Image (cartoon, rainbow, N blue to C red; front, side):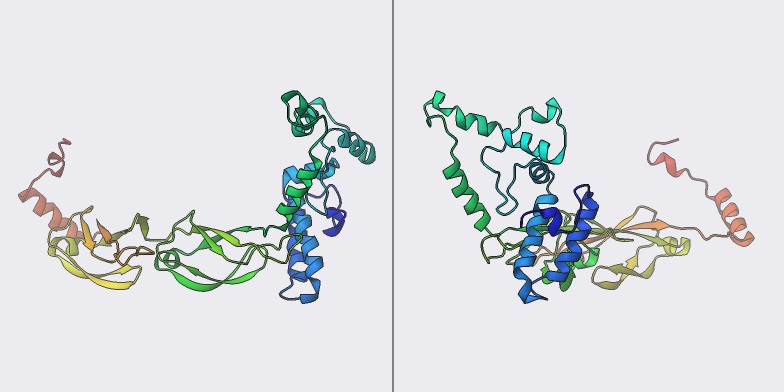
Length: 314
């Protein structure tokens, strides 16, 4: 690969979105799993994307500082190479662009002042280290959004990653947002090796319509009617494991909390479970008929009380 822009079929003014889109299309088309004879082409595509998707590497390539074949900086190109790159591309540089650029190049020339080497850059050791880096398998980072119940209970499933790659993976019980899962050998191929790195997948758990997770416990608000609150009742409530029956005590108020033991989130490496907490919400009917209204008014006259006194709000 001599020019990552040409490899991805892009012009030098391509935006980050255009670079990503071009890479996805070409990577899917030339992936070795689908086209075994395209391994070299796929390697060039991933190498080009590795340079252009990284702002620092892209900037260095545009300035002539980066060798696209190895991904390593060209020795000595940090300062003088910019003048050559500017003349070739017609780009002009401001003082700020030169400020602090590649200080390592200068320090390697003048290390003899510190008693290290005698006035020449360490190009041999630099190239050796760069070759080692290029031979290392490269991990590939992905982001994946998982439904709430799949994350809490765990699941094995086929997942399509952001670059179109389909993988089989196990999401362990109790998975939380921010957790990272590693798939061995599902990452990028090293530039000068056939070894693959790992795919590292960062999980985001979707919010649930009713459930809220707090550590290993599940919380949910459940509405109940006025008769159920006064007389008590047996109702159906959802859990992450399915529906269960729950006994509502007599004289239950809004805010009363009931517990379902063992209906919370499992810990991935342990057998103990959290609990589910139900907060009751007494809900009046949408329309109050005259019969109920008259009954409440008459009852209130005979049984006056101020519930705010209990919490010292009068």
